[in-house]
Length: 327
Image (cartoon, rainbow, N blue to C red; front, side, top):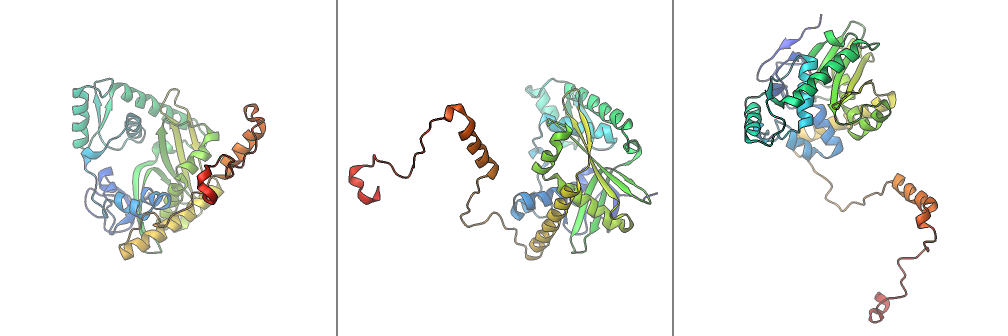
């Protein structure tokens, strides 16, 4: 039986597994400022400056009324609550949209109270989506234990580099021989299996997988090499297509290298107090090789482009006469 400590406010005493409100987790309750997967993604995708601005203990935290979630995000939040049985209280607003003053004020009040508002038709969609996930997983090989797994477990640890790391797992199964980390991803995107590799790459989701596995492995050294990370991808729109996926070894390897780079830069910035942004030099924007090939193929195959002369755009016979050698 794994030990999960209840934690309601302030900083945690040290490494371990915790259960805490999402608000406490996102405020960063680690003994020192810690690196999460979202902050690691910002370091890799953009810059340490972006990461510092988004970190609750390095920059000024956002006020609750500054949040501007979309309806799909509210559906996802509600679905998480219904699937996991944990999270912020749902407040159902009896309206079809947010165009009326009543709906807008009820939504704002819910966010101010730390709850999760959702419109009535969106709530019905979230309920159907949650039922689809739970029934689908129950009949899928290797997923039957999801329903009984621990929900929204926070893991906090200190990396061998000295960096504090934190993760919040949607659900986790920890056994003497192995562990499985689950993460639910709802949204408007397709959950078709053939689209998931590109989706993972485009959103740098391999960073999340690698960091979560790394953190749990630090807390449970005997399980290192035997921890699986699984996404549950589900579509917001009916029929709520569902896929369960693990990234392959190549993706996990790239994710691990990105995490190592993020931890290194995180430690540097914390030590120096300097969070650099983009390069201050003029950069050369590299035109994608695939785009160059696509145009070359079109030049060759598109009948509308046949007969286009091969002009040298740098040499025009119609130069202004008074420009001389400069023209």
